[in-house]
Amino acid sequence: MERWKILLAGSLVGFFGVLLVKFGNPVNMGVCVACFVRDIAGALGMHRAEMVQYIRPEIAGFILGSFVIALFFKEFRPRGGSAPLIRFVLGFFLMTGALVFLGCPLRMILRLANGDLNALVGLFGFTAGIIAGIQFIKQGFSLGRSYSQTRVSGYLMPAFAIVLLMLLMAKPAFIFFSQKGPGSLHAPVALSLVAGLAIGAVLQRTRLCTAGGIRDAVLLKDFYLLWGLLAVFLVALLGNLLFNFGQFKLGFVGQPVAHSQHLWNFLGMFLAGTAAVMLGGCPLRQTILAGEGDIDAGVTVLGMLVGAAFSHNFGMAASAQGVSANAQIGVLIGIVVVFLIGLGVIAHNLGMHRKERIGIGS
Amino acid sequence: MAASLQVDARGRSCPEPVVMAKKAVDQGHNDFTVLVDSEGARENVSRFLRSQGLKVQVEMRDGEYVLRVNG
Image 1: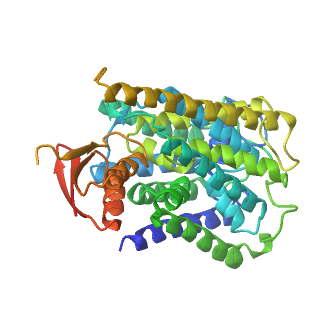
Image 2: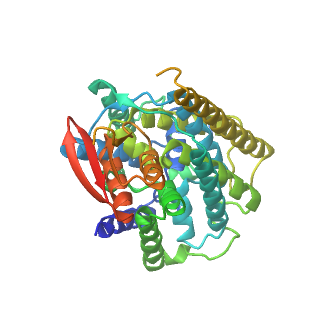
């Protein structure tokens, strides 16, 4: 009944994933939230990795597309106050993991659709991380409820998106643009923006989420979102074979912006998967929520932005050359921190539950 | 009726509203209400409950949704 909607949404994402590569985005990076947030952090001078600095209009498009369509359908609802600092930290380390794998879960699907089998290892890690996150939820993990907030607070992330677009147009001297490397490769601004707006609007309506797809299938035997992910994969695969055939390559070695250190591909996405389940959604979903007034998701996106900057400043981001010692330590620290947060929250919630049962407190 | 279970899932991130509703079902409840305040949660919880063979009626009240569930 609703399945055609999610299939269409996934198809649209897969289609733009291919189209944006055709028109200039780096290979297998038609749409990648982690990569694009990292590029924005670089453009803003938050890190100085010269190869990955560009204000990606797609990200601004996700936020604004979601914002406008949510306003139109009266679903724009400023809300927040659910453990914002924990969400910031989870967003930060989600990024550490994603930048060791070299891509968000969406890019993982797009890489897979172009024959990059390293992404299959990433998918195993991501799924394992999601299963770990589900165990936390089953044990009582919850970041607590959010409450209605002032309307103006819901406008802040859309305003941030508009400022980013203005900086992209004006190109002031303090904004960095890569002269070579992935950051220098991009589709025309108008196309990137239109793609971002369309994806933002459609995903606001359909709630497509890469973490949610696997999570709901495992936890609830609900395959609704997973159908959308399958559509992303199939349409991107078909699109790559039809339009980018010269770049299609099945295997592990020599894949674009990727490495074959399996353990770290696995653990990087394990970290991302666990953090995404605790956050209630993948990086893409967080940007969509940030557009429709979810301030906690806005905080998460800012955590991702800062996380991306630290990843490069501390030499924790992987590259096609491989995974540095710093990156390995970063992922391990991330896993420890995320698990400690999970256990800390569960311990607190169990304590509250016990108090309620014996009638102390509210 | 007065003592029937009410699951307050307002303001919860995914997938908590569904997990809370599932808990009620697992405890054997088949006549209860679920409060949610987002369209996404309304869809997810309704889809889950209907997949369990339960009937769900949705009412909108002050920007929130009241899901009345019965077997």
